[in-house]
Length: 242
Image (cartoon, rainbow, N blue to C red; front, side, top):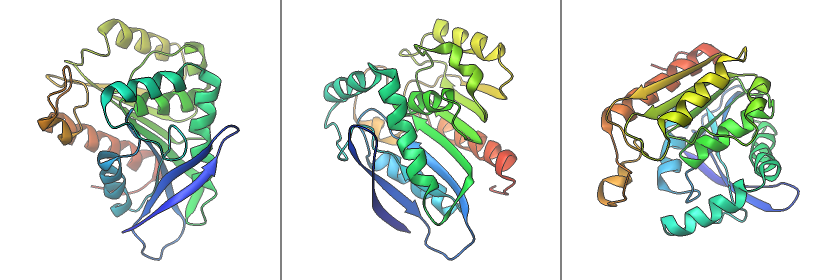
């Protein structure tokens, strides 16, 4: 497994993501932009990137905050997250900088890109899609579904998969219903999978020992949502992954 720091930038910040690939010689491969949770690049995001790399993807774990900055705890993560999403234009530019950096890699088929994300990263993946970026697929795992520019959902070009926990206290049923209503008024190929009993952060086993309110790992939802993502990637990329 090859992991390296990828330096790139947007209009205001120097960014430091992590590029992950399996290292075997091959033709150009589909690329995945992976947006981590609000704490920034960490062990969970990197582990997910490695799993995808083993399946034949080139993955960029994106830098949300500049300089590879991460938050040591949830309160500081909330501060960083809120500062970024306070300006939707800047937030979307930050996300698109990762897409542009990945598509420039010589090992990546620039015509075969997807974006996925976890928690705030899932919200970020959806915001990138709303710009009309050339993405074949977008997947949000337990991400927020509200947007300051919901009408931009009509710009989405790729297929959308939202994996949501029915017990997620941070994303209300009203927010979910509003998202579904907005998407229903577009021509986008979209789907929402609701996992019963799953709380916020259900893909992250690190939560088992953290004791965070309203957060919990849910093994079945983690496994099933991953399988749903692979099924979507098989459809849009014409690959056999399972």
